[in-house]
Image (cartoon, rainbow, N blue to C red; front, side, top):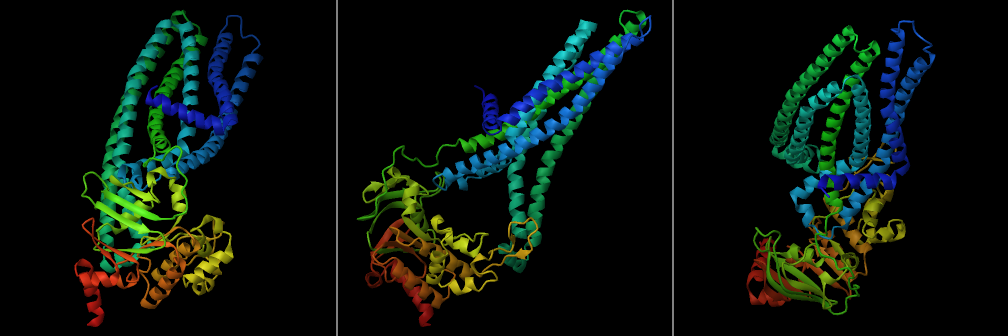
Amino acid sequence: MTTGRRVALAAWRLAWRFAARTTIAQLVLTVLGAGAPVAVAWLTKIVFDQLSAPGGPADLTGPIAGLVAAGILTALLAQVLRYLRAEQGRIVALAALDQLYAAVNRLVGLGRFEDPQFADRLRFARHAGGSGPAEIVAVSLNLLQQVLVTAGFVVSLVTVSPVLAVVVLVGALPAVGAEFALARRRAETMNTVGPHERRELFYGQLLSDVEAATEVRLFGVGSFLRGRMLGERRTANRVERAMDRRALSTEALLTMLSTGVAGGCLVWVVNAAAAGTVTVGDVAMLVAAVAAVQAALLGVVRDLAGAHTQLLMFGHYLAVVEAEQDLPVPARPRPVEPLRHGIELRDVWFRYREDLPWVLRGVTVTIPKGRAVALAGYNGAGKSTIIKLLCRFYDPDRGEILWDGVNLRDLDPAQLRARIAGVFQDFVSYELSAAENIGIGDAEALTDRPRIEAAARDAGVHDILSGLPHGYDTLLSRIYFAGDELNGTTPGTTLSGGQWQRVAIARSFLRGGRDLLILDEPSARLDAEAEHEIHQGFRRLRDGGTSLLVSHRLGTIRDADLILVLDGGTVAQAGRHDELVEAGGLYAELFSLQAAGYRD
């Protein structure tokens, strides 16, 4: 099966599954709509022939009533079809959106989200999933209607002149090829413009984002970013303008061709009528048939071209929905048991792409059950990468990671992550209420206000949140209004960087009791007093549990049971704080540099 047919069938299956009744109704009305113009042409021929009959016109009540009925039917069918297509579009778009983001959510790792090609494809899929299936169904039904109309009028033309029928059909062949060529160029144009539009969106967001506003204004780079944004838009405009000019010239030539064919047919039938070889009704029939056949064939060609574009776009949707897992998941994963012994990295090598250098080079370490292990080292040494591998956002290129002796590849990633709590240095500030910002750390606790408030107290942010205009129900956003109304009037609010970090820490407290607690720079935005308070809370949280701490502030990791010093993707040193300081080396150097600032 060709790709186009497979994509079209997928769109029809989606429409049939979720909107069968509206699809059937459209099919029935499409067939009825195809017969109406043919009936009008024949009824018009009958009226003209009777008006020009030698004995005078017969009773025209029937034909005239038929013309009126056909006119009313045509108008009503168009309105009902418009409604059915809109309704089908709403139903199918909702289902397609659900399937799209369910597929995105099934992706185990992070690699696809860092792929620019996937980012473009996902953007196309978001649009195509919302409108593609309904438009493909509509185009298919339009094609059916145009084919039926063409067939009906070709038969009518044959009754007048078989030669004219052939001339009209052959005259439409250049239009078919030209429109298909335009469709391919339009699809190529969309693919070319896509990256430029994505970068334009990026620069536009920087210019309007509240998070970036401070630096943009302080550094005075607004004009620079605006220039970059407009440059991307101008590049996209040049590509689109070239496409539009090509389409304009092609359409003009096709219009001239169709006009010439219609004019030639009209000259022939007028001369034939003057010679008495055809009737006045035949003239009316031929004029209507030629115009209708040309319009229908042009409609078929344009619908086919439009269908080609829609199929290409919906192909992006299918590529995302049907994408294989970025990381392998066993059909029957082993259950993730509570941690009893520890987590082991055996000769782990990793790099983010084959053309990039190794981030980890043969790392072999053990994180014992019930112990606090810290990672230290320069930026880029591989500390955060180890965390991502432990959460199985990526798989090692070589080596393995074991959970109580079981390879992470053999476990269910969702079950594994359910046993992990953590605070990441790149935590998310959700445009949600204060309670939801904490409760999202454990979906089962979203409605458990006592648990949420307890976690906020442990993170030292309860007084701040309870003092907001609407307490924990205050929307933490300056972009949206509170409430579901379209024109909400209650603006949200936002927090300082340190307050946001406390909220993120509260999420990890909400996940207390997990087997592994990961703390990746958890106090980077906090002052010294708040940092001390938070780490006291973490000590209580991890009491008897297993934890992995990453921090550039070596004073915060000095109490760890084991400190691993990474350098160039390898474990350069391992031991407790006092042992490493006494042994000298990289850790002692880093600690001396930080301590010197306080001593001086």
